[in-house]
Length: 421
Image (tube, rainbow, N blue to C red):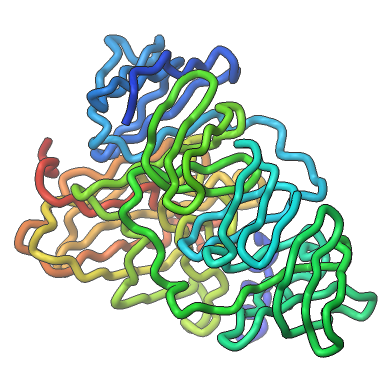
């Protein structure tokens, strides 16, 4: 039996707002746009127009008659995903302390600011708002370098060498077009960018206080993520006002998604479950291979079901149970569920069942789903008077091979949108 368990585990591991705009047309993108709403609906449109009153007007043959949506009811606008990836070059990724990311090419910088050339043009970032700068050399060093934590006492420079990682503690002094200057044990020393894996700036004690009040979150195809107030949206650009970066005009062709937030709902992926149970088909809980993840699949990929992508959500593997405490302001729960499209590329079906329990009682159960099936909306889940919400993914009618599940845009709604609407 132990030999069978080892074989099974090995097999599973191998499967490893807003001025009036001209609207955003899909004609220049070659595909339709996906608009996902608070109620779990997904509309596909050829164009989307945002009015000064916060109304999204959708046009396209898949929406006849085309609905008008209040911006407060929209979770995300997903732009066509099948576009060329950003070229691999000398651009760096700058991680901000509020959780945003900016990608670009370093132009200059001193002890106060870093200036990047980004898709939005020259962008100046105050160093006090930067948590880390990660360079292309980091990819070659793997998790040992990527997982290195910042210090509360000094800046840290991770240098790529033939033997691995060289860690230098000190103070970042300046950025130049082809090198940075770092003050370390041997004094002020220039490091060429091609030998630098990352610079981790000294902790300030507020890294965990990520911004949660932003009205919009803009994801770019180069991996950048920017949050702030949405100023404009049209066929050529997205304009967002960032608290850190100021007013940014972002070319439409570089945007992959725009997500929204307001006081009416909370993304479940931004909350911590109070109880987690993960059980493999064979073996004990300690043998579980694919733990749950926020806003990514269990393997770290994009959340996608039957071609529909989700900016926010949960990636889990059967059998899993995540329980959340909810307060008395919650009225309903909504989501889209399905098997991750990752499973289509491996020799497995990924057959599973989703359930939602409210205070231990089943409020929703999906049919048996497998890879390639369209995402199923979670409906009829009322939370009024409840204190606990549990998201459960169970084995289907086979083993757990390929049971990579997606909870797409799971949200707890407060007033306004009831489960019966």
